[in-house]
Length: 273
Image 1 (cartoon, rainbow, N blue to C red):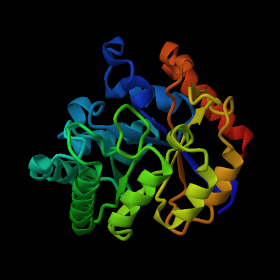
Image 2: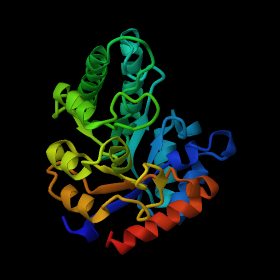
Image 3: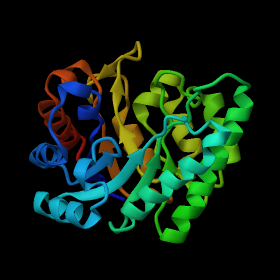
Image 4: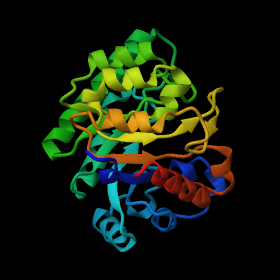
């Protein structure tokens, strides 16, 4: 795949992280992302708003905005690590898989396993893997790919390289893909390129995000992320679908979300995408 063939999407967490400071809705997100020059969107269960049970209406809104749904992302208060919540988490997974099935090629991204209770970490890996694998089975029946998105946020179970190795050893690679997030990998461990290469067969699409040398979120191209290397590795990943989804959590984005994501899109053009 040539760099110019890459497709660039935007993740809506840039607005979600504002909490009550963001008073808009999903249509505002579609406009900002479309105006920013993006071709696709990854939206979350928190930001889908009134479209949550109206996939046909959301498809129409996307068409007007000229956007493709790259992926639908969701998490759980269980952190996907509570055994007693497995059933509820899988019901939620089915809901959003059914939603995504209305959008050809769209994936469902499941958030990072997170520690929300006491007990051995090893047990939590097993529970998370059970949830992810069973969700992957639901997705396969519906014709929707499911992928896991590790993060470096508070109490994540999937922080450093050992955590990545542990969860991937338990996941069926044919059922559960991977959405690597460059910023989260860099915050958790410094072997980003090696991690991407080691597990490139699991890559479905990529979250492209930057951090500075101290692990603080930075605008794309202003930190230590080697974006050209990421693109090069992605192009060797057999199941990579061509989407680079930019996600921005920096203070710059907190002050001006729409402006920040537009600047990041311009930065991507400097890399040829």
